[in-house]
Image (cartoon, rainbow, N blue to C red; front, side, top):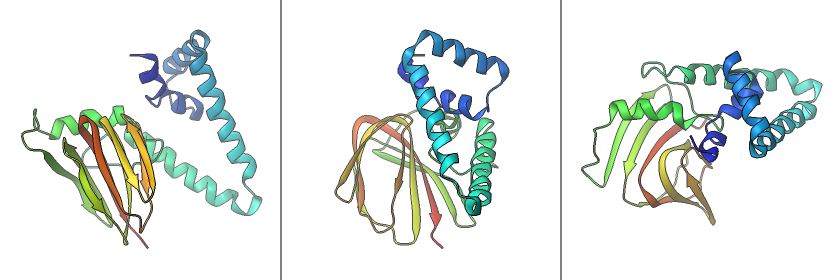
Length: 199
């Protein structure tokens, strides 16, 4: 695994959250001693967690703690993905854990410009895979919150007047009422898309 892949694998975030096995924790600590980039990423992430904790006021601490516990619960489910019990994706989701599941349900080759495969559609939650070599037209959502996790490839997602260059492992949240599209840079692109009904 290259240094860049290691940094984007989610191991550092899991290390900071204490979600790794003792052996994995030791390995990350060893890698941090060898590679300054890893040590720097650990320090940045730990600083962000400390700042987040410091910003919590006594009145909101309980709700933030509950939110954080939901994220941690989601990460635990993600660690052993089961297609019958899929977690919600969030900015801490690890594309390397989702990719084998995606490969297990998709054909071995992309035979059309775009293939969509639905993973989940229940209780206001829709999750599906998009495997494509084609750019997608602009769309806009007024009633669902959409998030993307890029499992393979490279693309640009334009949201309103902003452009986001996404590489494998990147996560993006699309705000309501914002037109957005996708331009494939290095394909095929494999995306995990999640849509949650707006309240």
